[in-house]
Length: 85
Image (cartoon, rainbow, N blue to C red):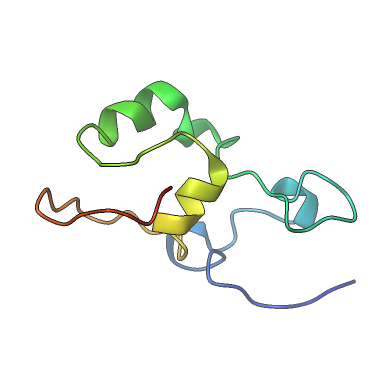
């Protein structure tokens, strides 16, 4: 087994999953992961919450790009968000 710490397993996500496969959906390729399978991350809610966020897409890699620690961040409409492209 691989025992390590990583940023997303902290804050509100601490203790939220038990096995790597909960997020890493392709065995033997841990570069592939999903954040949006959780019930609180359904697309309609996320689309509503991200209205006006430049470059927003409902995609796990985009979620992780803006939220590497798993925390919700207030949106500043004057900040250009080039991170999600």
